[in-house]
Image (tube, rainbow, N blue to C red; front, side, top):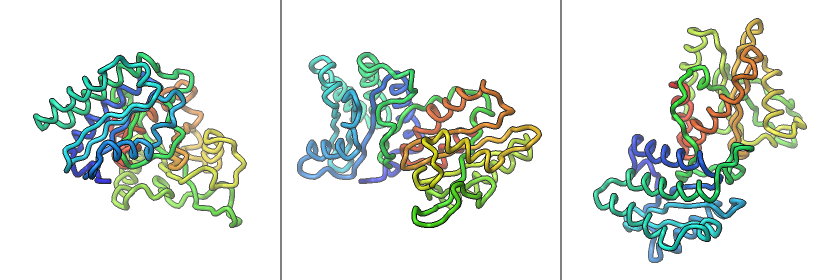
Length: 314
């Protein structure tokens, strides 16, 4: 599969991300975009295989939609799962395809995809509204793939404190080794045990958080792990694991209780932001919005460093 960054600028990517974000903010369905270099002799069969590979049939309501683009073959397809296909009126997908291709012919690829995503999103929102009780759409339990599948990005929140990042620190403890249940931090600001950041990214983000602490007194730490199950803590979920790790680390100034820690569990496809008691419960919902509406779109596309710096900039 071709790297999407070969075909889209960062600005184009963010436009498509924003379209997916706006659509998925209103639906429990899932929208993804697959970009490949060449589809071969049977583009539709290749698109169907990609649909399966991306786990699009895993939505509970069968409400997944995938936009497929084969660059060298100049092929484009839209695939919907059974649930959404049964709901939309006849000819709907053809109308979406025509709208997208009209922009493609003008070499406005990002605009075309964004427009098609918006059209699909309207129908998904109509037939499969967002699950407010869980705050999730249907594929959040499935592993991330670097295939331009994203969800929810709302860049409108303005309070900088709500976008300051930190992640729990984890050690690569093997199940058969006698490692401590909760690991010790190897670095103060960034511990990338999942290996999703480059050395340059780690240094840049670390310096950013170091400056933040100097300017505001807020200590933040960013950590990535592969999966919570790698650690023999007995914690039943990521929420419990993150709270216990935060406490064991003692993140933040003790007198202020102002630490912030964000856990990214790559293979569990989960994130959590843990706050010191000094912030109070009023910030809990806001931290969830940081995850849902700012971080996940970039993480799903493999733009890990961008996810952190984008959120911090807000």
